Image 1 (cartoon, helix red, strand yellow):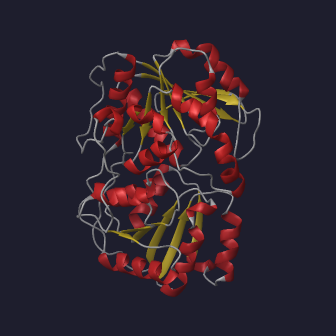
Image 2 (cartoon, rainbow, N blue to C red; image 1 turned 90 degrees about the vertical axis):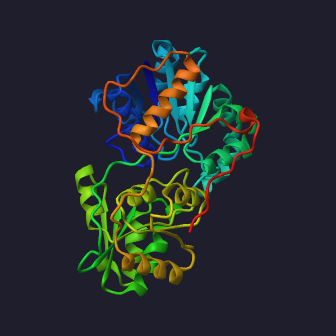
Image 3 (spheres, rainbow, N blue to C red; image 1 turned 60 degrees about the vertical axis):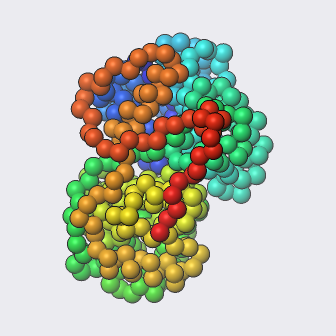
Length: 392
């Protein structure tokens, strides 16, 4: 099958959506599909990444929050017919609007990574104004793929008319070596994600203060909040115990995972929670904000995973949870979460359903694992479905 994947950004840019798109595209290519990524960047380029042809189109509007590449919109309008299916990502980026506006008849799949709001005052104010355009994308898509039941519920709250076209395919995890036991020496707390204010890394820094010198916080990621977070660590007197690593490649990140005693996500909004999932897959005790996506992940991970939901607005409670997680030690088994191979298998079934093209057996080996939930929304099944199990 020939698949065009439209994304706001792509590797080496780092973020939750970027990771999702890269892992999915690499898996589709390994399974034998012909995959092209259509994305935008400061300069035009074409290259092969993980067996995937990546076309980068120059930005017309390089604004941080709402980047636009009119050459990309033009390419989709003129060349959509070359693909069996177009798969566009992110409600919160204008690139998906460009994929939906053309008069092409190519079947469209939409993965919105939907949070239901914006994450700055400006974006929150614009969010309701943008909704008619978002509805255009939703109405054009033959299937809308949500990564959790919690995300699906947000989509159906704001766009109830798409209920019969929504399916849930949880994000995958990468295989990681599980090294059980407690880490010796300084206990490392790993916090990963784009440094935006809604990720609430500042709350994690505040929680480090009462933990004392035997704990160190490793912050992996970059973003507009970096400067203010460094200043906060300095004001609180913990600058020597908070290390900002910036962006890391896969090998360096694997090293951070191997050293960590605890992982934490204080984020206020997530469609899935990939930081939490990757930590649990590596057997790392994890503390997370009690948002719906994290609650659902707790249910997916099962009782064998050490995951505590703690309110980041209570620094003492967050510190206590981090202390308990470090004392628990790393698990000897990986949490039974879906893999990216499972995601690829379920996504190819979505493509087959919307195009009518049978999905051939993959040319690469598929690692066995728990199958993602790829089910239609309530209107199609005739029954109401829940958002997932609660956390511990």
